[in-house]
Image (cartoon, rainbow, N blue to C red; front, side, top):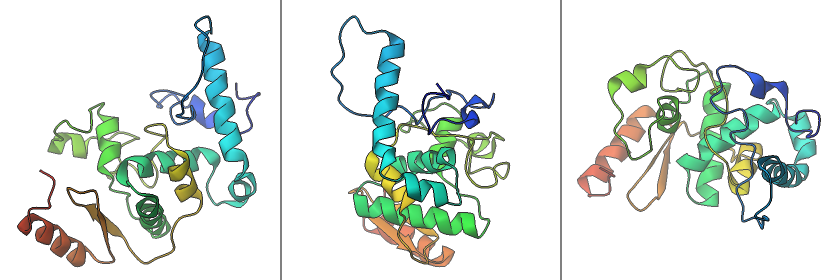
Length: 202
């Protein structure tokens, strides 16, 4: 497959990656014959991903990040942002953190690292676990080892074309509205406000 699709690289062969094609099978509605083989289905999904990525090929080629890293980032954005605007903003936060050598500190990567659903409880041992997917752990410097879901085109676009701003923190309320902050103190104040106003997701 690596020889057939320009966006597949040997990054997916890393033995620490849970599922080599995670993040590369474009999520869409497909018409598939009952007689189709697994190989044909995967090929259709990969071809669609190639079509979606092709419009960004030039930007990908000049990016400081590889296609594997961009899809990894897009997969995190997919779960951290809701609206198109929020996803671009979240992408900007992650770019700022990567630029300044911060950890991403993304809970969704921790869930994936310990193979829990997003609705499950996370424990301190999960957050502290040394796993190449877990960006809450000090073991991961930068991006996780690979994608954690199948990102939509909006999230892929956000990863390639992030918002430019000075924010390093974000939090969402129960209505999925995202609030951005430049400082930790501002972020904590925002969280406390949401809790006091009954807008904090329990």
